[in-house]
Length: 276
Image (cartoon, rainbow, N blue to C red; front, side, top):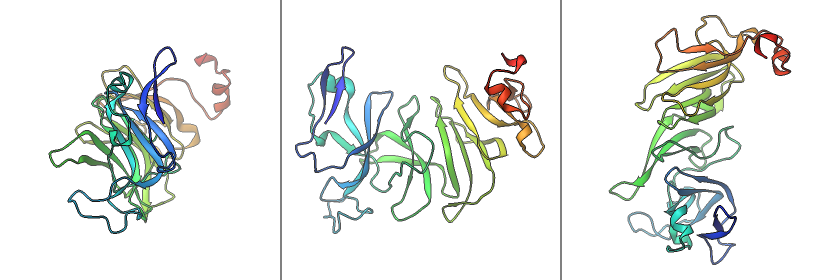
């Protein structure tokens, strides 16, 4: 059972299943800006008995069957559920992607991320294939009744982490993949604009940490790593805390926010006089 809780702490609607054993447990719940609930179940399960063309599924238990799914979206918004004027059974959720599966251990990123237009983003793989791809999925179905999937990062890159900006801009950390496995090269930190253009923020580092700056007109990001404007090979001494604005002119996109040197513990323990 999934329930909507109001500001007073009362349950005022949600989703229910007549047979709680008919579906697996839910691993992740996400709520889009337009108020729809996204559900990531711990595994795929059979949710229909025929494919999109009306043909009966010959092997519905197969992970590649069009009759089994792991990722769903609620038909109604949380506001509509709270009003208790809509159906609350499992027919009120729709499969958004039966072709792919999600493993919770495959990335450091949140399972579901959203932009301001309520497109949903997630890292998924084809069952039986170790290569994962970051997809963007539209909030509404097209004329054929399908949610439209767009590759944001292809399977030739292993994604470690990513964040989506409200504009649809997309920051990610990854490295080259060899047969779906990490190549062992140092990671790179990249940005994909809402229009699809690619820019490299930084490269040659092994442990980028980053978060998008909220409440800004442009897709700015805070990150810990080597200087984006430096042409030198990254080293421990070169890592610092930077703000990067991909919309700025080349040569002025990054700014160092603190003074850094190889004694990072001075900074972490607030003993760096220049920064305290």
